[in-house]
Image 1 (cartoon, rainbow, N blue to C red):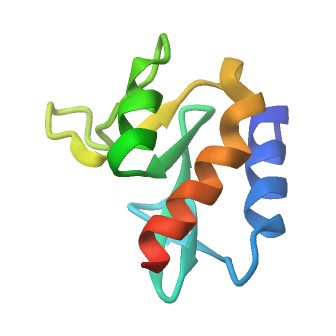
Image 2 (image 1 turned 120 degrees about the horizontal axis):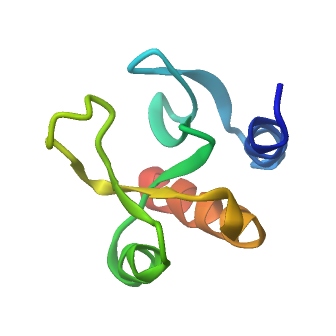
Length: 101
């Protein structure tokens, strides 16, 4: 496991009631059966809304998550490069709170 995935796993397992699972064949964490973070191309992928979503997309290299690579991005999901690793936990927590409702 590389450093990016180790950090992703460490963050996911640190979040209360988060359950490790799979989404589109990719590792993810879920709350109440709903995915809120995933790991793809050495990036953290978070389901976000509102200010967090807008802020995340402003980060250089951050993009909407397009797991198929066919221009069908998932509008609420933001893919965050490892260079923003210091922000990963905060975005993961925001994603958990959003999905948890």
